[in-house]
Image 1 (tube, rainbow, N blue to C red):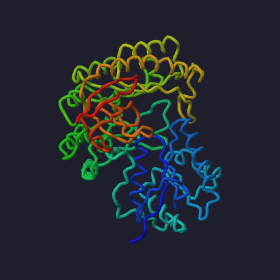
Image 2: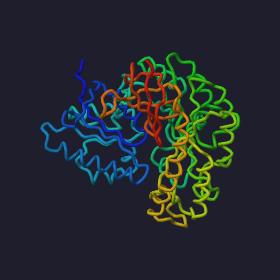
Image 3: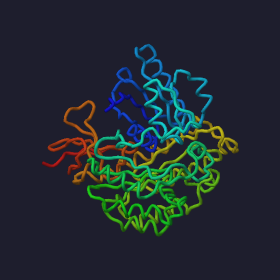
Image 4: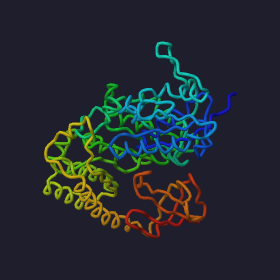
Length: 446
């Protein structure tokens, strides 16, 4: 049996990106052994994001810094860069970053394991005409890089929407849903490995199955997943407002545990004129979507994201957004200043807002939400809740970082928990003893 390749991996961007690199590394023919430092590796993989300008800048910075760090090592690890950055910038990157040994596109995910293996062995990749095969076949188990209690499950790639500001369709292509049988099989395997929380991700979960000609695809998939043994929590991220019709909202409310009443609905704005300029999929107004969800699921924890400073966001329209956030009292709100991306329709729109003003508006919204979040969380003090324990606190021995049912991994606040039986990967029952603006503090029951 071949010795596993020692790999140092950095994955940037969204959970969908993380799943790609986990799948890719899990399919390397020799297997991989993850190492903590580039200097200990035979292969360094940087999986990149290029959704907006700050993500591009971060990806390029990490590549340059890593290349510098390994340049004088002997032997020097091979450097591979994969993901959205080479998909967006292609040949330009190859010219600017000759120190990269291997580039990989998201569309080549099935071929990359073999290419990584050959790169370490110093072999050139066969030509397309030569019949390059998926080098990770037969494929091993997907590598899990998240804490042991949860894992992401990507159910689709790409997107058919035409939002004016978004680069995803040009990078990832049109909607490409995975067969439900493959998803259920992967979920069953993850649960057998000790994972107890599955987080479904896609650019738009509610679009799942449309390209396969499947009606109510997400509902049918969720119904299959709910019965799997060992599943404690099922979480859905990225539910487009346009997909939350009356029937689907009713289904989500009636499904019951282990499906969590946690709704991630990316509204992006609240003013109808700004939403029209954004080219968002046609849906009921945000107020009506919230009313629908809460009517069926009164206990719903709702999170969303907004963009400030989009072209045409006048002070009056921004005030409408502030009023919506204040009145809606959602659990979690993420706010991003508008980033004009080359190749998108948004860069040609009139009514430009300065970046400085977009940032100021972001801070205004976050100040409103901080007060709302603090008020919501204070209501949980004294209650006993289940907490998923993700990791030890990096500075305080005996303290762990975890999450309650309404805290999605990596994007929301956390629950700091200590006490008997608290271990990474476990679900514990704990009393909430303190609340902060975004986080909770809990003590596990004996």
